[in-house]
Length: 619
Ligand code: BES
Ligand code: ZN
Image (tube, rainbow, N blue to C red; front, side):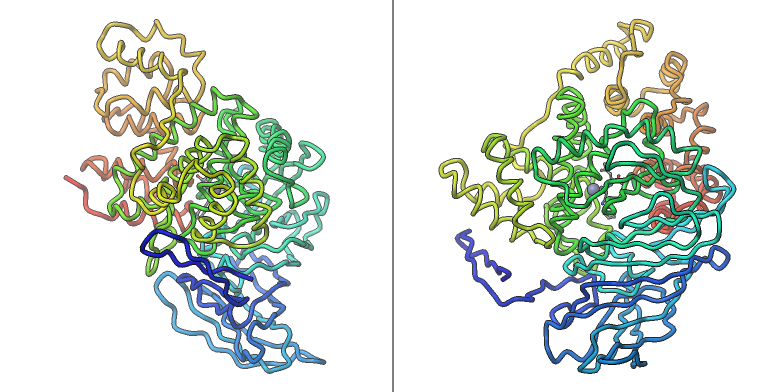
């Protein structure tokens, strides 16, 4: 039984139960799950690096929500469809299908005719080189330089560019897959992987039901190293040992999360380290998170990313946002859990510092968001690309909302509710209304007199941050503020600073809070004292290079060029391109560098940066 909720003018939640199979319209999918859903999928694909194509078939097992449903509508994007068959009582037979007109940003619906007795559908197809959910890398773009590499990135609506399926987070299915590759390459998926298999012929099984955006595949020169009984790393040989060292707290993170929020439900948890063009920091593909190599800093200082992707095993993968308008239910909860994990494993001091940095970036995001309606938690996405909802608001405002709730009820009661929330909605999708009902029923009502529904609704429906939002503070940063002021006032020199004691977070706080125009001379002094242009930490490098652009500090431009060519992680490079585009000489540099870098970027990064770099310079 699903639940439908109406918010009355009085702000009361009126709850009515409606019949089963009540799917919420998803503006980003053509599929019609109220008619038919797929509950199991079998992939059979050949990976061809020469033609940059996956070719083969997908077989979809059907469950009819309408007994007389006559069509199955699938999402596709840039796929070449070769045939469609249905399984009737005895055999596979050809069936009619139509590929509709592509629609802006959504791809094209594939409608398959279903005879009354059809129980499965098989589609033979190939992907195209421009598939938005795949990146095909040449050997030079890998660590080993010998073998090509392929990886998928399906979230939000890119699974449809490599598998025809119902590409909405409201449909879940189990899957099995056969993947064939050339010798020397290993395929891995968001499924059970066999670490020893290396023969070019790979089989996978995913027994837990997942939404389409968690379908994932990667192929490359990959090896495995265990970190604990149930955690390990897949990476190219030259990266493997460093990655396993950097991330060897993963098991401790799992234990801590299980203790607080309930069992890990996915069997193993492994990490896959991708080449640096991976457009995200991480992606929570179940059983196998995909991770950027840019967080391997050598000192575990950027591993909150692992805490984040691991936390999605509860918030997101287990309890899933029903549509992309509710992304905050995935990312806000996960950012909250990430903070809790970091606190448990690395202590309050580090957790607080990271909280302050996150809070500062939220304030900046709110300040610079064009449409104030986009500073709401649940946003209006109809007619827009779901990528437009990807902002610090979903992550950090969501996190501060949950922190505020925690503060109102106390950690013990809040944690009990949160553990219950994961359990009550496991392997289901939920929207903001469903969340509100759960919160009211299981936290607000059992604890009368703490808070009413009104302030909760202000968090959910209001723009920006409510006036009484929690403000994180970190004692650790006070000496940094003091030193920064003294130095800028000319009262203390850089030699008085024992910066060897500064952690990555302290460096980020120091750099991010310098005035924009400190001038090339002060930049040179900082560089001389701390060798920042050559830092091996990619987050510190990012903050430093941004300052270098703001201050036209030329000695850093060679590093900037290398950085932009090597790294494709959007969060690290987009702000640098944006900053460059603010001046005429910067724009010239951006265009020149982008011409060299573009071919190495993921399609998603390409389209983001195309828009930034092709606009006329601001001056
Ligand atoms: N699930 C996201 C990545 C994502 C979100 C992809 C929306 C496509 C659409 C992943 O868990 C994530 O949040 N990654 C962050 C890491 C982080 C620690 C905030 C990233 O890539 O920067
Ligand atoms: Zn996330």
